[in-house]
Image (cartoon, rainbow, N blue to C red):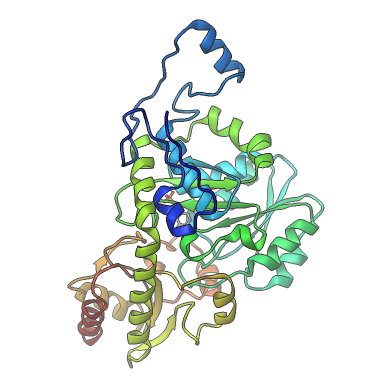
Length: 397
Ligand SMILES: *Cc1c(COP(=O)(O)O)cnc(C)c1O
């Protein structure tokens, strides 16, 4: 391994392009893809020394891999985090944070508005190990405070949340965690480090599904945990090494290279989303539009304070309930019907019957999801084409 240029005081856009790069003796300009499971040693003595940790170097790709390390280092630089570990999926990252650090008797406080599989981990899997939880309305800081117990170890939230784009005041919840001797973990998949860096507001752990905007083109699954050295040493490292939710070097390479255009892409996602939200807000068949950077969003000031852009997701209600929502979706000629998000292609989903179909009706209602709610992951197409497609589909609805 040669010429590892040092970041020094490089700015974020430079870090996104060059941060973490380690060149091989071939001096390749683009980061190399090391598709290898194992590593050879010059001598038995070297193998012994590496296993003892006396010298650095890779041993096995479940523990570490040069391509994966470059992705981790670049993510850490972008989030302003001391260390990062990549995982096979976003859910592997979420599960690793919970299962590596919690034990029987511990308590978790989490915002009710969270990704469906995260809710499953908290409500179904953790209780089997005697780990209890309290779900709160994430936007209400007093509820976080009231839910704290002496045995609370982890606070978990997603902001903006899926699909109603409600926000949580990261700094306020981080203070509550700190006071209670617990850690705050933030799922930053919707905003990405291009728009929001939770550690700047006191979060202890940041979690990503890099499947979404970091890949940005709907190709490969991946996840990342960003944390401090003590969490890595005391909990995460040994858990990841021995349970094995490792990312493929190929997927890590895709996501590493995608970071080079993350900032550009996120700015265009935001610009397109704001345009689409504006178009929808002016349409007579649309009864509600949710987008953090619109002045009519109930937490607009908080959005401006902790985000650099509103993100690529717009959620709205069409009058006429499920039938009208389905007619609209079925009439789309450009935007695809898909529950994924963060793709360069615009995607629309009906949360009630897809992503949130397993959530109890009362819980769905409390999250603000109605039969007429539709979520658009606004892509990178021309915003005029997206608005025209929605316009013709709204006529059918
Ligand atoms: C997609 C998503 C996840 C899960 O990520 P996978 O890569 O699909 O495992 C977790 N949180 C949020 C907010 C997501 O959007």
